[in-house]
Image (cartoon, rainbow, N blue to C red; front, side, top):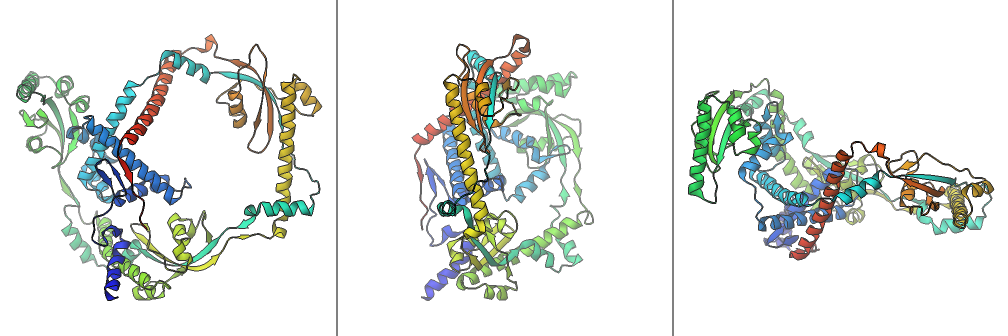
Length: 617
């Protein structure tokens, strides 16, 4: 028995911090295998969190469905990555470097900002090799997609047909049959029957109120009693953080080596770089020579400029030469794995140590967070252990850690605002564990906030008494009857139209108004969208015979209409058609490419050895 208690004490902190895969000491089991690659729970959790963050509160998707989507994306990515690798799609280190340096969130006032780059990766807890590998994978898959896009196109007749359909307009006349609720008496028996058959529409939703303990890193940090001397000592120990290193703006000319024939390729590249060197000696501008001769297509368009670099950014040989130059000077040829370079220093940004006074706020914030983190994790582990060992109360956990328990108001599973609107809180509060009277598992709201919940009050879902909803029941019955009557009248009018009567005649006999707008195109916004959709779904008139059709609008209104004519663009409206054709061709090509890519991915997944493991209980 004692051994089991010790095992529980060891496992609880691991479970809290997402390390449940190590309990028992065995190898972690993957959640899926694609070929030789394994996808683990940590990969899925990260993908799920990123997807949930992107969707925010806009999508009402439950956690299980979102995790399935995240796993599907991971499998798709792995299938594509393996296919790209097998087909020889490769991205060089130089291409990755250039791509990273152009990403907008790493840009400063003068281009790529290494400090911002390092800071963002650190803030996201991403190691640079992992980030570079992620970029490599995305670029290789992008190569694959680009190959499909470049090989997929729309033919002239397809573009012509698309433009004709897009630019088509239609002449229509129609009558509307609104839903007119009557004030007729409804018998008690009908009311009772409708109420019983639709009880689900007249229910109070299930509600809970919870006790909770909240662990918040910011609150812990704010309460720490720190001195000015501690801030200065921390500042001195973190000089590298508050030091802006010397940066150099570099331009280069690259003569790439042909790896297929290293000996000849090396000599050809050396000859080319000497040719560039000779042109510079004759007085040609570096930017002009770079644009003419450089084998680095990205920087060549910028006159050879690759932006500001920091120590550690580039190949050692390249960097050694670049940091030995004075402003305006050009190096001798420098050999790197990419070929031969001529390097020019165009700007020097001296290093600078920021004074304590200028970074005082950042220093305090960083030190408070650093000291608070240990306390946060220790309290988190202690709370997890105590709430696990004492599942019937939060009192001991609160008293042992100095926290107070708080109590929420009642909230539903689909609460839109307030405490219960947080999806993680709602999921935990309505879990079987909490509804059965036990403390919740730790609820990680973010990396800085954790809650422990316990049921305070549970109000089961219940049916509202008929007397409380009688007016609502009567209104729904009358609306339903009115909708049925409107539909029956519309069906009758449509049948008589098809039998040969005119819409004007039918409108007069049924006291309806005929509406005939100007010719309607597909983008028409003044008419109800459901009517426009039905109009452009109707068959074209044959031999000038009108085509009757029917549409139901969102509010229950019925529309009976007659399609009179279909028109295309006139000759005078064809100006700019060449440009429109190009745009339409690009759109159709992209549409076809997406469809082809989806079909290819489906086939690859079918051919690949993909195994998804069910979650163990």
